[in-house]
Amino acid sequence: MNLTPRVLNRSLSTFFGAILLAVGIHLLLVAGVPDYATWWRGAASALGEIAHGVLLATTLPGQQESWLWIVLALLLIVAILLMVWWISVQGRGRASAYVSAYFDDDPMPGRVEISDEAVEQALRAMLGRRADVVSLNVTLWENSPVPGLRIKVQPRTGVAPGELGAEIADAARAAQELMGSGGPVVIHLAGGARSRFARSERVQ
Image (tube, rainbow, N blue to C red):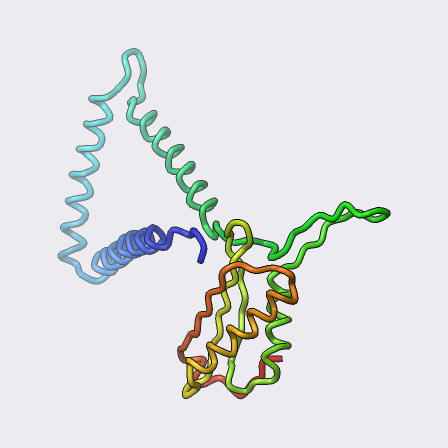
């Protein structure tokens, strides 16, 4: 429920993972296969000569260095800027406060803020002591005019999802009334190994 570029993240992970895998296989072949190591030494020498020729052909007039180094420096700057942008877009779309209101009341004006932790604690109290729920987590995402609630619940195997979802929805509505706010609610019932093997714990 946030603006994290998941497709981009997965594409980059796949791309760099493939590169690392290829480098690892190459190093193993160089270390363990003599014929491959001999071929690689010849290929590396040829590539080195080609690179040296390109650098000589692109030398600046009156200088000893190639203008390709300037291009490489510019590309590195662009890469750094892209990395900074990529870091900045991670996790966007999440809100920090469910309620944030300013009261201009005499003699003590001030601001009241309610975080997602407060909503989570209210939900835990309303759901009571349940042994059929492994974990419960609440996050907020930006929405106008009121932030939305994402309630992620991990039930145990065998729990009726419809019945549990209805109870969580009722608790969410009661929590919104308690907080004096509204907004959309997304209930996510998650499964997995933890649901099958986690010891008996209670939401409390």
